Image (cartoon, rainbow, N blue to C red; front, side):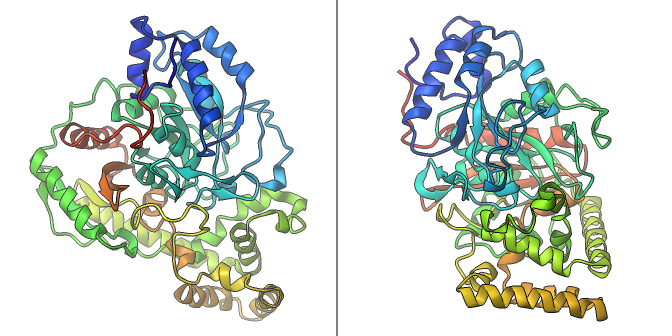
Length: 507
């Protein structure tokens, strides 16, 4: 009888099944027992009956046959809660299943345990919501698991499941992966389907997983990637990522090291850490360092505010009555967008996006890879709404009843003024972001790859102050396999802990 969940990677668990050393049903029982004991609050919903039925009929010949997984709560599964991690939709149930998840179930053979915590509507890089409370980092409870796929990262690093789904619209796989010592891959845009009902705006969101090993990521992509007629932006299947691991010759690849890509402010020791890790990678693989400044424009609030259009569409006639149910960050962001966004701001946003694309294209004309930090530093406080320790715009706008009333008056006045002077809102947002840089700080290191659409992977790279950090490696479009081999090179040279220290070893 298995007393503890598997603490290796998911691929090795399948191997154990095939050798007859463990069974899916026993593994699932150990998984539920560990979740019941856990204080991480990584899971927000469990479906024991469905999982037990899936484990009983699991086909271990499939890539992840019988492997218990966590499903990010923003990924719909028919019959499960469909809350978007918000009190607004606390009672809603999903009527369809994400095609990404459907493929993982049918082609991969996984056992879906339940839903993992996410930030509200996937909008922040934190792991706290009004609906579900706080998710903790298994490396150090009291620190954030990150977001928006924080529950998935905590569940995998915390030894509860060996694999979990994630989504990345601005860093939401890579950010929690780095905070929890995991591999986090954002593939080329369209690699994994967003069907059955993908929004065409902002065209930055990709799906993927939180994993303990590079081969798990490769196998995951083989299982779920490929064209889907329900998602016009999806790409043809590759299907050979795992088989081709180790096949890329890394010698001679040109590498630019830009620790603070996107103008992010790094915490103490991070720049030195990234440079040291990049130099080790170059020395171990025979790559070549290239001194190249990579300076994409700051993807300022003008661009991000426009992306809240999809949230407004989902809320429908519930808005603005539902604002008190939402986190202050999401509600105020939507208020700002609704009051300030107009055609002039849209034009400015598209100009910034075009400049960012050109900056990245020019960089990849000169180098094969870009190495930077994944996050500004190690995990911050679990209850924090942002990663900034300075006064935030949200703090200012919600500091008192008078401030809230004043903020709403300011928005109304700006909307009226914007009708007379259409360029005023864009100028005002620029001024506000200069005063409150936290508005654009979160995800500054990761969002450029969502905008440009290129693949990027966060690789565990050791610790700072006892907490895991990651380096991020970027490549040009469709070189996902190359990035997997770069991550594999680090994994082989400097293996990382597959779970957080202190997680019980299997008996």
